[in-house]
Amino acid sequence: MTPPETPESFTLDELDYQLVTALQLAPRADWQRIGAALGVDGSTAARRWNRLHRSGHAWISCLPTTIATVTAVVAVIEVDCVAGRLPEVAAGLAGDENVVTLEHVTGARDLLIQAFFADHVDLARYLSFRLGRLPGVAASRTQIAITLHTEGSHWRLDRLSEPARQSLAETRPPQARPARPFDADDLRLIRVLSDDPRQPAVRLAERTGLSPTTVRRRLDRLDAERSIAYRCEVARYASGFPISVSLWGTLPPGDTGRAVSRLSGMRETRFCATLSGAANLLLVVWLRSVQEIAAFEARLSSQIPELTITDRSVALWIMKIGGHLLDPLGRNLRAVPLGFWSDPASDAAEGELVARLRQADG
Image (tube, rainbow, N blue to C red; front, side, top):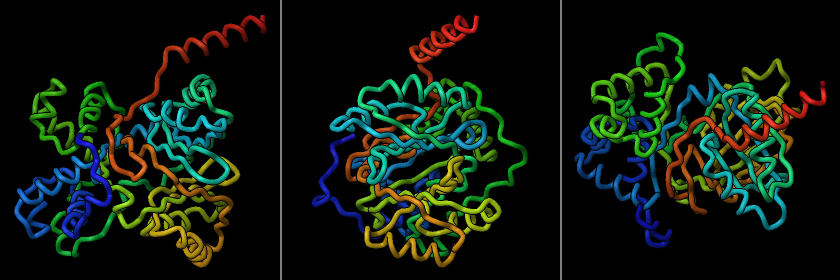
């Protein structure tokens, strides 16, 4: 990727915003269809996208939702860093393939992480033998996402007319059967797809060793099972919503259904999950300014009076989102394909601890 242009030298016009919205609705649609929705020819749409993508101002990510929301444990991890060591800690964690989001934030934590694990054992191993031993980490606190209600693939810029949106609406068949676990070919395909989800089937076949027919069949199945999700993202400073705020709150157990349904449907919401801790809700919203935080919370209080906000953090630098590393302005640097974390050194350290415990027990 070429070096990003400076904000002063790069601007997005209305067609750029419409293009991003179109790709949020139909991320793998051909350029002729995208162009028709925008009222331009397909080559113009492709040329515009290439400019946005090469500069890091827009990109499409591919997330294996079955891993992250059905068969795995999703954790929200708060990290405190030793003074002066935050950049070192963040750089050490950013490349972990199980880390979906990594943010430098304000408030009672330095870093805020969303990550997924095969099970609770893997989560414990990661916290004890990976995060806990990383130089510069002073402390951490972890909660498990009991239910993930919405995530960033549902967020839209909403810059298209209703007829244009309708022309791009994906006609997906109802989910006929539960999503099945990924096999090795699925994981290899998703990993390659993560580099650029708009790659044609022929190119994906070349890179995976599968036939184009097999690639198309697998993509159709993964899409029908809702096993993968695409996100068309735009650099936050250019999005119109440059302020990302994480809000922790409490909801009475009996009121969560109505409340999370309303929260998930709000224009500003990027992420909403019920958690295992005393603060049983995490809501991440994108706002136009810091000054909007108070007004947004007032609206929450009015519309969902049973929700009590207990803490908040503003993102200073979203370093990783949806498996992509970003610069301080939110421009894409490169993809880190998502997958389950594994580390032989951590496995060995855990084995040594188990041996010590066994010996003590004897």
